[in-house]
Length: 172
Image (cartoon, rainbow, N blue to C red; front, side):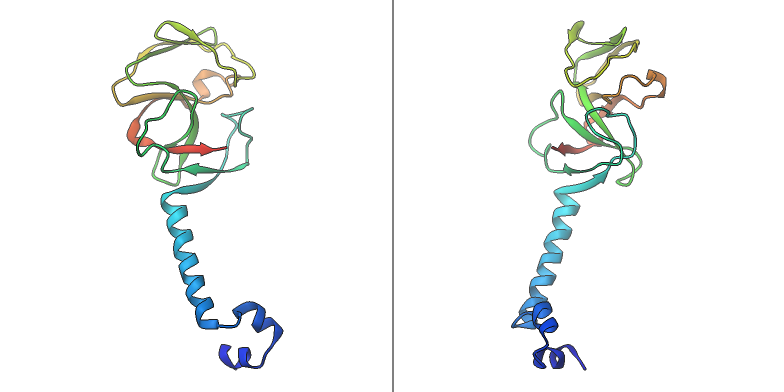
């Protein structure tokens, strides 16, 4: 028995599955599949967080979405939580933008200094005791770091990132 015979038999299951017009339902399913593919490939990407570098802001093993179109017309701003491409689109880092192009960044006793001015970081639970020498950013470089500053600086993945490797902004 093919789908049309099943449908014509007026089976409740077939009616629920295929509707009154199976051909139109098939076209709708194909169009919906194509729209979902395009949206999740080029506009919004689901991500599963694997790591504790963004605690307490973002929990380990939580699921979030990334806006891949966020920086098409405007650049990242300080405080944005971004996805940074590492080894292709399968390995990415979730970090906060703390330094903008042409700025200087350093840490002293856990405090963040931008252009020799101490910067408030209200999203941190604890500042830790990071020390890092002065870094001068280029015209297309950003400085990114996680919110979990209780981790030793040497074990923390952070630093300068070229604008081309910032894939999008986390949707909250």
